[in-house]
Length: 171
Image 1 (cartoon, one colour):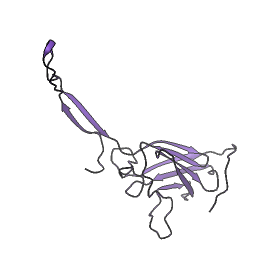
Image 2: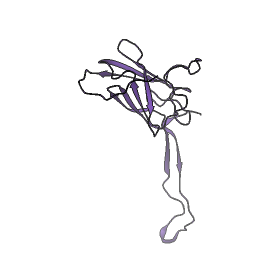
Image 3: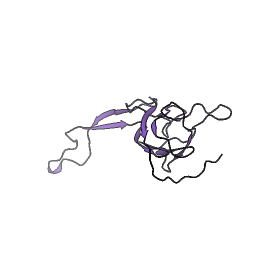
Image 4: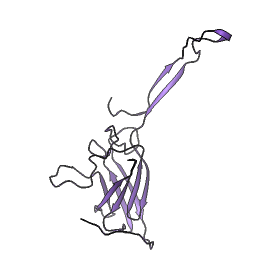
């Protein structure tokens, strides 16, 4: 059905037949059946890397960019945020996302500069209006072969004296 995945999704057995004749001991039918396996892999997170001001995440395929959002619109029509970053106290961290040119990665950049030291939790919302592939199939957040579940991970941010180049936030 629609949005179906599997490893394997399906298999079938076949034999090759040709009209090459039986010269020199040949046979028109391959005596050994062959099996073809088809795997359908859903959109998953393949890499996650914290940065001083957020994180970079890599996906297994290209994202559907239309409809991705961090904030609900003025009319309340966009729905809940598709990327939610929270600090250790549960406060939502405001920021922006940049989608890579190939559509297979995003970078989150926190508003106001570098992240304060602490533990952060990020959730990528899966669904028809959340993270999904170009066919509209939702993210498989827990990489179990079934789409439609969110991806959540936590990561630490240590205190740093490294210099970071930044520009002021603009409205």
